[in-house]
Amino acid sequence: MKNALGSVQSALILGGDSDIAFATSKRLVRDRLRRLVLAGRSIERLQARAAELEAIAPGIDIRCLTLDATDFASHSEFVDAAFEKGDLDLVLVAFGVLGNQLEDEHDAASAIGVIQTNFTGAVSLLVPTADRLRDQGHGTIVVLSTVAAERARRSNYIYGASKAGLDWFSQGLGDALHGSGVDVMIVRPGFATTKMTGDLDTPPMATDADSVAAAIVDGLRKQSDVVWVPGKLRWVMSVLRHLPRPIFRRLPI
Image 1: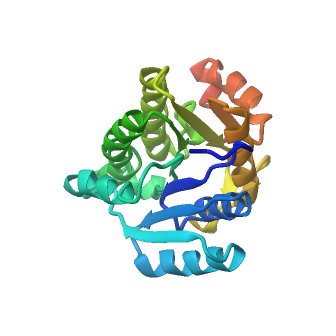
Image 2: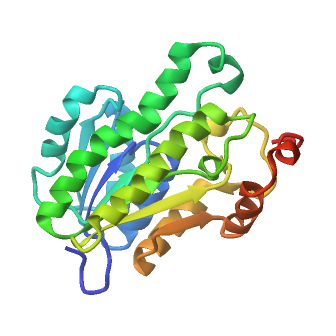
């Protein structure tokens, strides 16, 4: 359970070696987190992240678990292992791949790979996770979405489609869990400067991993349903979402 100050005491982070996940982990650890499960594809990278976190908070209980988002058959067993030491206050879904739009739109296998990782893999993990949280009667699921989920854009419509599916699924999941003691918070960052976007040009209103992490922790305290990073993107995307398609197609986005 959260402590008397409302701080998260136990967390599972899926995609724990990503820049945003690690920045969030550091903030949670500094805010009295006592038990953490980091999950991702590379145990070596997770263990390196864990060592840095242990230096911030000596004595914290950190476990590292291997997770393959597209190995759907393993997900039920993975969730059981993640909850092995007891209840979890927070589950953060922070894994994903960007893909290469101009190449993937001509390669069905690559396009499907983006969809399976970002959407199908997340759903496969969220279903058993939500059941465990519902059974324990408390907890928060935080899903890392993106402003790209708001409307399909020529420059990244495969990635945007995968995140749009996840965003809508998470909205419905939040409604389904209403009244159970479990909340769902959707986080929609704009372009974030991380290792995943390191080869891309930085657009206006870009953010970074630490700013997203700060918004996540603030959203947890406020029990927000949706968090935009930066906040002004809420209004920008509201306008873009309602532009007539002939006009929208002419925009360089």
